[in-house]
Length: 111
Image (cartoon, rainbow, N blue to C red; front, side, top):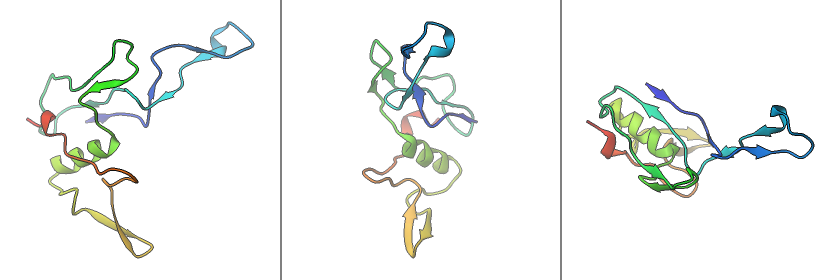
């Protein structure tokens, strides 16, 4: 089971000019430190991986990205993420290869 979203949310409440009611406050997209829950599938149970700073703003330990989650998920399904490709406009692409970095299996969470 994987519970995730495309972004986390900022750890602080943000205000919008023009009011003080709840509809004027919110939390923005925040990719610098967020939570993903993963369970089963050969993963270590009951553990926490990584940490943020004291404000919950920046990841400071165990930094990962969505490509790492994809690589780990494929690995646990028995699929080699480095060989799993698809063609687009005649060129092979890898699900776990981004514009500037490649995903890695997060071995630290595998049982």
